[in-house]
Length: 132
Image (cartoon, rainbow, N blue to C red; front, side, top):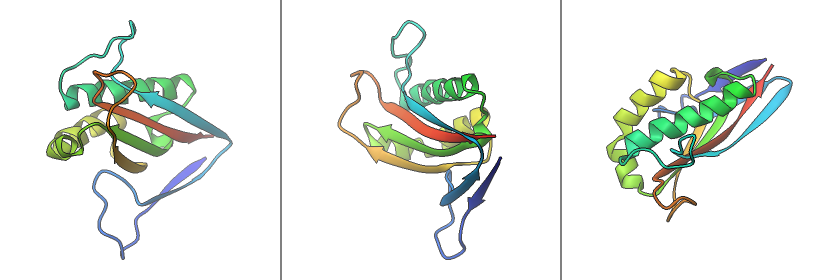
């Protein structure tokens, strides 16, 4: 399995994402949207960074349970109820990403939405990974 991150010189330098990811492998893992739910099904954290850390941790826990690692992520979509708040915390969210998932970024998008299934949720992450 290999994951190649492609960031062409003609595009703006990526910060916290890769422009394209070319992946080859044998197992495709689709990761359901994860919010800041704890094991009891309750949203944890009052701030976007707190919820982002939990949601990313939940996404990575599902990935590990499927036999993958953060390096296997090919695509992650972030759904945020307040994109301005997300942008305001971008450095902190990037530090959380690096702490939990490392420095290799998948192809990513941040999508502003009105609300999530759990009304207290501020952010949700989903994605897919390619495993050997």
